[in-house]
Image (cartoon, rainbow, N blue to C red):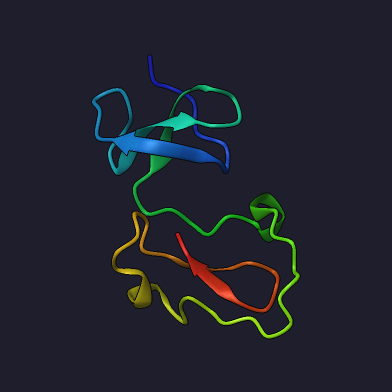
Length: 87
């Protein structure tokens, strides 16, 4: 039996035979269960990030994905507060 897909909030991913090709076994932090997630993750919706925009002159951590080579997903994502972060 194959596991369900992850919600937008998942962590601690590893390769596992229970998930299909190009997917990882992860822990869904919303539903507190194991789940399958794509290896190449999309940026989460800004509403899921829950950033509060309190900085008057924000500075982006990144401009494009290649700026994020040291983070797990190597993705440059918008926060909704006029700056980007690496995930």
